[in-house]
Amino acid sequence: MKRGFCYLLLACCLTMCWNVVAAQKKAGPYVLVIHGGAGTILKKNMSPEMEEAYKASLKRALEKGYGVLKNGGSSLDAVEATVRVLEDDSLFNAGKGAVFTHEGRNEMDAAIMNGKTRAAGAVAGVTVIKNPISAARAVMEKSEHVMMIGPGAEKFAKEAGLEIVDPSYFRTESRWKSLQKALKEDSLASARSNAYTNPGKLGIINKDNKFGTVGAVALDKQGNLAAATSTGGMTNKKYGRVGDSPVIGAGTYANNNTVAVSCTGWGEYYIRNVVAYDLSALMEYKGLSVQDAGKTVIKKVGDMGGDGGLIALDKNGNMAMPFNTEGMYRGTVTKDGKMEVLIYK
Ligand code: ASP
Image (cartoon, rainbow, N blue to C red):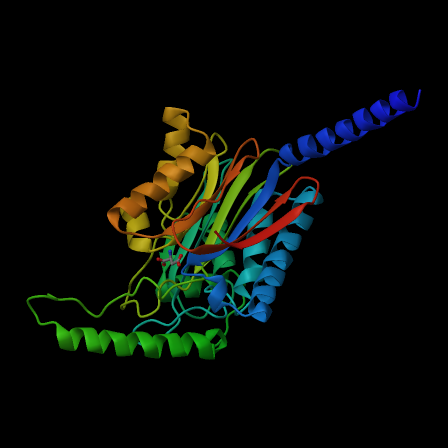
């Protein structure tokens, strides 16, 4: 009798454990995935306070976007709201806290895309728009264009009623110090080389001089996907340089038939590999899963000498967050509100 009871108890425990494991495996579908940049992010270089600050900030952004989606808002509203939180946070290389160009300016790029209509909007090289992601959305919804740049984009954003700030708003001491360091490395490198070994190169972009581009991809209750990316680009970038983030199909892409993607990394490689669209095409034409397509495109970037990562969310709520750097600030939230924030490999 006693033995029978023990067996029964054991069976109950095993069933409970099995259910917990099954529930964990079933986690999802994911509704919002975010990143805050990829790079040489090592635990040994991070103080516990900094780590906490990054995690708290990523959580704040996830909460904002999740709130929009939970209340039946569109994925487009969710990605814009999420990216705005990260743009306003000086920890990230987007909006306030953007990195400095070679000339000591903050020049920002951003893009947004609606997976349902494949409408897209982007701005590049903007210096006074407080939230470049909202300017990208305005270009998408209030103009007949997809991309606007520099003073023209700024004029348009002002006319669209967006908040305009003094360029000094974006300045942070840590990013300024990063530029000074990069300039020093730059002059040392050019002293060592000559016109033959370094032909026509206007300085050097060190691949470690970029972290903290931000991005979000979301799936709403109506089954629509959207993607958004915002960045200050790369420290010490040259005049007029535009990265992959605002280039539709390179750093940002969304298509309800396949996937929403936001990239981060060495932009030149992402443009040359048309990474975000390539990921979508691998799913559409080759039938790859979002994870396999994600791995494939990051490998292509790596094989060419580039580095970085991306976030991708498919129409069924499956997600991937591949990267070939030491770390990538990232976070997810599933339908039931379960959040996860990660930094290292
Ligand atoms: N992809 C961005 C750029 O090249 C930088 C980054 O994501 O870190 O402008």
